[in-house]
Length: 120
Image 1 (cartoon, helix red, strand yellow):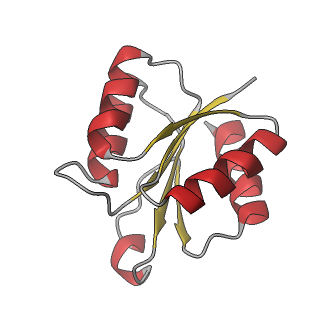
Image 2 (spheres, rainbow, N blue to C red):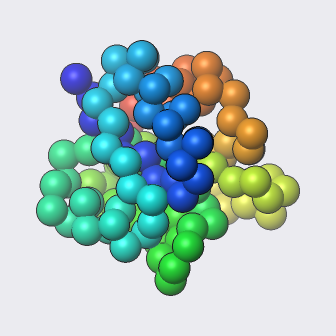
Image 3 (spheres, rainbow, N blue to C red):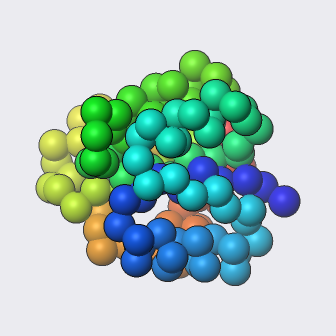
């Protein structure tokens, strides 16, 4: 079973995402802030993908979590999630990544995630 680290500070989105990802057959590990997510990545580098909100409480944001994840697992697929305008972020062009707007369309996210994992 593929393991996904899902980083989201909104508890309702966490619950929805966890249920949807589990229904799609993924093992899901949750984190609600960047510090927790980074600790999980350092302690267990066996994740198959990362889904992270960009704007998180505290000093560590989604971009920083993804950068750390790529230091640990070079081609880890990353799905960035944001409630902000996508134009600001689409120019970044990070390989093996995808940017999804909130509110999330869970079937689209799951399909896109599967494609990223297959391509990595």
